[in-house]
Image (cartoon, rainbow, N blue to C red):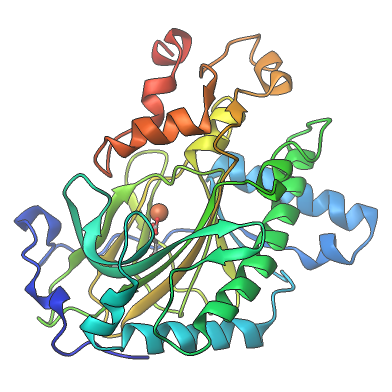
Length: 340
Ligand SMILES: O=C(O)CCC(=O)C(=O)O
Ligand SMILES: [Fe+2]
C-alpha cells in the first residue's frame, strides 16, 4: 500500500479534541459474523438460519460482519490496488477529479466545517454503476462499476434476509429500495495516511451515523474503525481480513424498523503505521421515496410510532445542514419516541 510522503493532508491542523495522544485505545468489539453462503446456495433451513442471524445481529448491534458473500477475491484485490494507485497520484492529478458533492476531496467532510485526517473519492451510483467523474487513473472507473454491481447484489441479499429474519411479510421491503433504478446510493473510497508523529492518534473520520439504509464496508485489513456500543462506550473493530465485509445499519433503516434496528455511531481513529483504505457502499432509497416505520413493526410496539413520515429528499436536505456528529434522525422523531 502507498504512503503519502508530503501530501496536503499533512498541513491539516486538527483541534486538540481530535487528538488522543496518550489515552489507551478502546477495547475490541465483539462483532457478530454471518456466513451468507448458507443463504446463497444452501437449503431453506440454511437460509432461515442466516435470516435469523442477520436480524439478531441488527437488533443487538446494528453492525456485523459477512463472509461467504460470493464477491470475488480477485475483484477486491484489483480494487485495492487501483485505489492505492489513485491516492498515490500527485495532488494536482487527484484534484482533477475534485467536485461537490461528488468527486475527490481531502480533509473536509461535508459542507459544515468537519475535518478529518482523510482524503476520499465520493461517487454517486446509478442503475448502471458508479457515476464517477473522469478519474485520472487507468482502469479504476470500470472496476468501480464491477464492484458496485457485485456489492449491490450482496447488499440486497442481506436486506432480504433481514426482512425475513425480522418477520416481515414483505421480504423485499428493504431490498426493493436499493434495487430501484433511481436508488440514491453512493460509494466512498477513503484513504487515511498514517500519522507522521509516532504515538499520536487523530480523528480520521469524526463520529457519525450513516444516513442510508445500510453501509457495506471493507478495508485493506487495517484497523481504525470504532463503533459506539449501546452503553455509549467505544469499541475498536478488529481489522478485517480483507475478504469479508462489515454491514452497518443507517438512519433510514432505524426509521423503517421503528427503532428496532439501531443506526450505529462510528468513527475512524488513525494511528496505524499502515495507511487505511476503506471502500463503503451506502445503500440508499430513491430521493422521492416516502419512508415510514413499517406497519408490522409499529404494531409490535402496541402501535407506538417513533418516527414521522419523511421523504428521503427531506431527510437529506435536513442532514445537509448539520455537523457530522449530530443526531440527524432526531428531527424526525415523534413525541412518543422523544418521551420514551
Ligand atoms: O473508513 C471507514 O472505515 C469508515 C468511513 C465512514 O464511516 C464513512 O465513509 O461513512
Ligand atoms: Fe460512516
